[in-house]
Image (tube, rainbow, N blue to C red; front, side, top):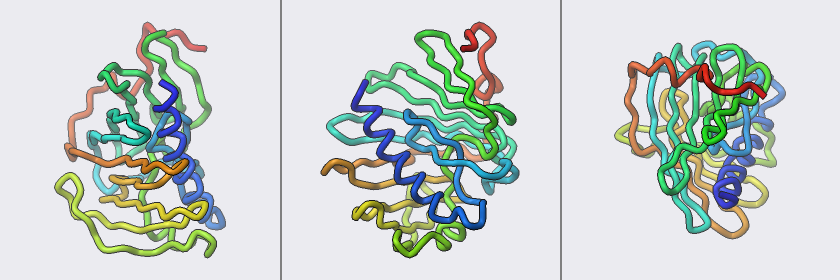
Length: 214
């Protein structure tokens, strides 16, 4: 649905600005896609990207009158990860996947896989105040009080993105929250649950054998 793309793109844009702000040290950010509300730009290999080996995080995205689900799966400290995006009716729409080497977008209704090049640091935005603190002054990076999200004590910071305050929160470098405004509407990506050090199904982190490579 078009509104899902708008919500996702809004969240991607603020994540990209966040990572670009610290580009001088070539360390901030992760991969991007217009359909992935958790994504950002990449620079370095995904070695110990997160503070825990594996996890499954369920997110709720809301904005423009819509609410939909995303699920983040990761293993090997984020070297392999995938973000599933669902339609509001609960149908799995697409997956943004890093198999540890290359990135793909999977369109499930078509059983199609679209290569996106090397994935470097995965597909989900890496929460890291130390990197963001080096962002340009135009983004006004500000450390905020910790917040409790999905049962975890999360660090938090804000950035001034295009004149709007955007709040981020995370735990063990996993981003749990992006709270921003787009076209006058509040857009929110927030973790609901996390299963830490989870046994991630192997089929979540690879292209299905019956999908056509495009």
